Amino acid sequence: MNIAIDVSPLYSGHKDRGVGMYTKLLIEALQKYEINHSYYFFTRGQKVPNDIELVHYPYFDPYFITLPFVFVKPTIITVHDLIPLVYPEHFPAGVRGALKWQYQRMQLKRAKRIIVDSQSSLRDIERIGGFPASLIDVIHLAASPEFRHITDPRALARIKKQYHLPDRFILYVGDVNWNKNIMGMLEAFQKVKCSPRLSIGEAGQMSSVKLVLVGKAFLQESVEAHNINGYITTHKLDNEIIKLGAIPLEDLVGIYNIASVYLQPSFYEGFGLPVLEAMACGVPVVSSRTSSLAEIAGPAITVDSDNPQDIARGLLEALAMTPGKRKTLVNAQAKWAHQFSWEHVAHQTVISYEKAR
Image 1 (cartoon, helix red, strand yellow):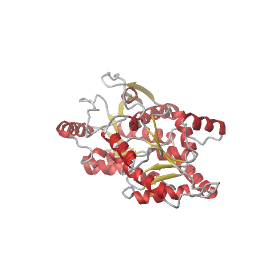
Image 2 (cartoon, helix red, strand yellow):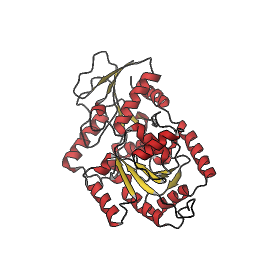
Image 3 (cartoon, one colour):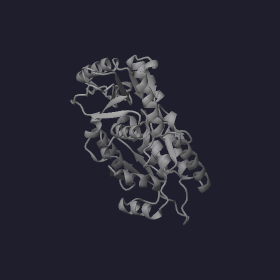
Image 4 (cartoon, helix red, strand yellow):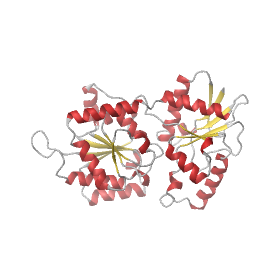
């Protein structure tokens, strides 16, 4: 089958975000594991060759025009999430956004198949978009193969020195949008710092722990970043929180490996790749048990995203683990994360392609 894939996310601001990563890893997996098909790559505005049998748009935004007016071939569309429509009070569309959603929804109805990352997203598309489940294929994503456990102490020491990382820290990787629950994370971290349960260090002194935030949005100007910085300053957490901004992937793998615990406190996710990335790197994960995270958290320590006290409870549980308990959790997480692979994603995507022919 001759398949055309829109790779526009690789040449836009989405390049280093979830949509860009999905597009890149999907292309690599299809070319590696599904070699019986041929793939043609194009960007918005380019004409699709006549011999193409199917077109795949691997991204969708309810408030922006991402789909063409005319589908020249049978079309598949990946919808990662409809979070702005699930929580419209936190993501106001405005008049233009509302009109664009109607256009996008109309075009989505013309697709032969829709791919989503989770059962949670499937339910949202059914409820909000009015699409039947029979037209939707759920294909869970996977961490990039580059996320792995690093055993070379020199490599980890280099990363720790380069980014001035403390001996113990809680790690978060991602954006600052409302659904990420950054304010809840900060409140939970403050409770952890004040808790008498924080484990005792080798010298018999209270062992410190810091919070490391990875993501370019933490260093950009935005309402969310302003509120985050205001909370940090008001609660005198400036010396307890490290904001690293955007990090090269190879260094991010090392930072995961060094972390004491990874935290995913989100109110809502379409998938939540950092959870599987952290598991693949051998760090205990604390995750909220909502939306798609309930599908992929597996053996992770789960918490109530609406309750900062419960998030703090999960963090303290992870931080106070004995080496034996930590090893047991890390091994269970690695086994769980191994079930999610890009070979499986590629295979299931091709099955979806074949349904759309």
